[in-house]
Image 1 (cartoon, helix red, strand yellow):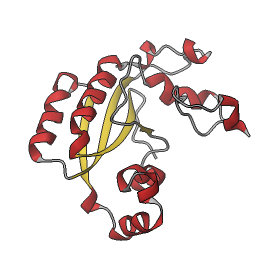
Image 2: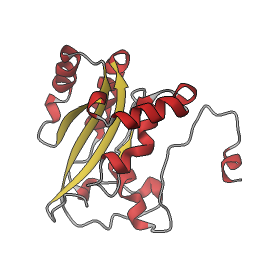
Image 3: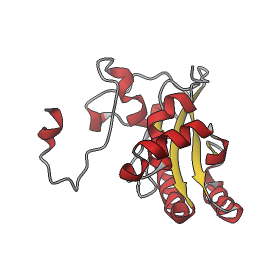
Length: 181
């Protein structure tokens, strides 16, 4: 169950990275928060062909970073990066060593080498890792946000027939229609 109140709406964000992607994570988080709506009345749903039917509430972004080998210095730099947004955003680091060892061994034995390792495959387990959220936005460290992510978070609320949202891969060689078959 989400921890929401009528006057406060939490948007949970998840990303995972190791020490080699800490700088990219910093850029991604800064771009996300610099574009972020701080109140539900500010959300623009027109790109999704929807109208804003949300009750007025402040928005708080809770960012959860699953990290592996990220130094304390890198963590402090990430915290400093989001400092200008501290009134409406928080950042939590979750070390991979805090995960159940059986999860890591299962993912390592199954397909982690093929699909990018534990940090990538943990996205499949977000519902188990964060049972207090009914939904969560997962982002990559190489994502730069040019607009507000809040409308994406609430978009599925307006259409109960959909349970998953994602961004179109602009570099794919397959026609988009191939994904429907």
